[in-house]
Structure formats: structure tokens, C-alpha cells
Image (cartoon, rainbow over all chains, first blue to last red; front, side, top):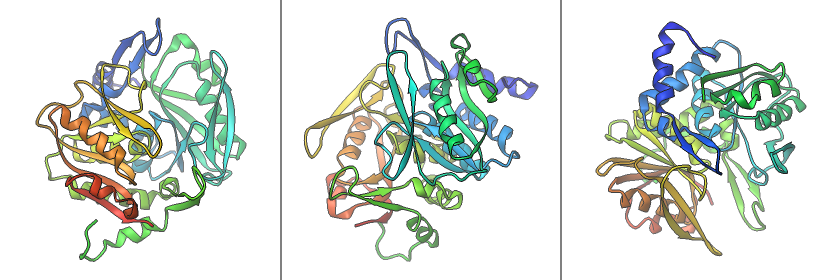
Length: 181
Length: 182
């Protein structure tokens, strides 16, 4: 987790800009709402800057963002580091030929899709989402990219919910987060 | 879209990066796929820059993006012009208290929501989406902002489908698009 001198102020601002909404989407869940972060242009910019500073010299050519909140953070990072942006979507949203990866939910399964041909074997990729909970979604994204020969350099999220042990589920794939929820 | 001026040289590079996928999501529809634009960092950057150059001196404090492809173009514009980004979402996605605006589809209805408190009266706003077709979604977006007292300065899209007459549906609200497709 990022924690160096000059960053502490930015991280504090980011953490305090995130709103917690109890019992959403169902009773017992404390939802981490990043929309309030997006209402603070300085804090939003700091969020992007913290990721860009970490990744700009790492030869990353692909930023994959998970629908839908990964679409908010991924493109600004991609633009700043000169990488392409690849949306990872729910089923039947992407119009061209896709590959799919099924993954488990608490009850049942879901599917994530990526366009065929969006990435090439040997490319170095980042995966972005707003938050990591159990890690199921990120794992599906990792598998999609690795199936086509891409090297996943790191997964990056604004927020981690450590109690849900998503970090363990990613195994040896590195995870970088800004704040814990 | 501006008619008589010479086209900015960056636009052709953007135009060639958009992929048309026939018969998606259903037969007869020629789907304008912007994901191929996002695979070209220069073209994507040029698209964002064209919007930023237009709006950076317009005192815009809100960029509202329509889920989900408006989430791709809206935030980079917001960041560059120092505005807040406000996501406009399908029902049930936003966790806090929301206002809703229903709108008509070809068959049936849909609904767009915005968080209460995200936008204040008097704020100057942009609405961003990847494409304008019939204009139904953009109309609903504009209504949400106007209901809370914001002033919608312009709607901005990468692509316009002029045959679907979305521009007229916006009832006089300015629309800026980078390119047209048939």
C-alpha cells in the first residue's frame, strides 16, 4: 500500500473523500462509494497521479478496466502513461468477437468478456478497478489476459477490503491499493 | 457538428479508429464501436484534447457522463478542465439517495439516475457520452441536471448518427460531436 511522506497528505484526502453507505446493496454491507471522490477534482487528480507515478516507467502497454467503475479510473491512467485502454465487460456488451471467463459469485456465477485482438501476447498489462473485495472479478480479468499471453504486471485499486482476503485470492499476482476500507 | 470550418486534422485519425460492427445488438443495426479508438493511445488522446480545448475556458464545473461509455470519455475531460465528474447511471447502481428520470426507448422505457447533492444550483455542466443516436438518453441526462438547477452548456459526443435526429430531440441545447456516421 502506498505510504511515503509526500503521499500521506494526498492519501488522507482521498480516504476522507470516500463515502461509506451502510446496507447497500443489501443489509450488512458497508458500501465504499467513490462517487464523492470524483466530486473533488483535486482528490480525483491525486488518485490518478498516484497510480501514474507508480506505473509510468514500467513499460506498460495495456490498462484493462473492469466495468463500470474501472472505466472511470483506467482511461486517465492509460492516457497519462501512453497505454491502450481495454474495457472488460459484462456479457453481451462488447460488439465484436469476444473471449469470456466465468467466475463465482457468493450465489451463482457471472461472466466477464474482452475483445479478441485487443491485446497481443507479450504485452505488459495493468488491471484497474475501484475496489477489491473477494478478488473474484480481478481474478477473472487476470485469467482473460493471461489466456491470450499477456503479462499482468499488477492489479491496482483505489480501495481494498482486507477482511475479504482478495489479496490472497490473487496469489502471487501483485496488488497495489491506495486505501483500506 | 460545425459545418463550414475545415476539419481539424486529428479527426480523420479518430474516424479511422472507429469500428463498425454489423447486426449488433440486433439485425439491421450498424454498431459504432469506440473500443478500437481506445486501443490507439494517440487517437484517444486527440479525441479527449479536442473536447478539452473547446471547454477549458468555459467555466464548467461539472462533467456528467452517461453509463458506461460516457465513463471512459468524461473523466479525462473533467480532470483536464478541473471539473467534478458525475456518473449518470442505470437504476439501482448508485448507492446513495438519487433522483431518477425516465425516458422512452424504441420499445418500452428506461431510467437514468444521479446522486442527490452531486451538483449544485447554478453550476455549469457538460454531458458526455460516446455517441448520440435518438437523443433519448442525453435528454434524460440534461433533465436530471436541470432539475437540480444546473445549467447544461452543451452535450458532447464522439459520434453522431444524424439520420436518427438526436440533435433535434435536444430541443435547442447545443450539441458538439467530433464526427458523423451513417
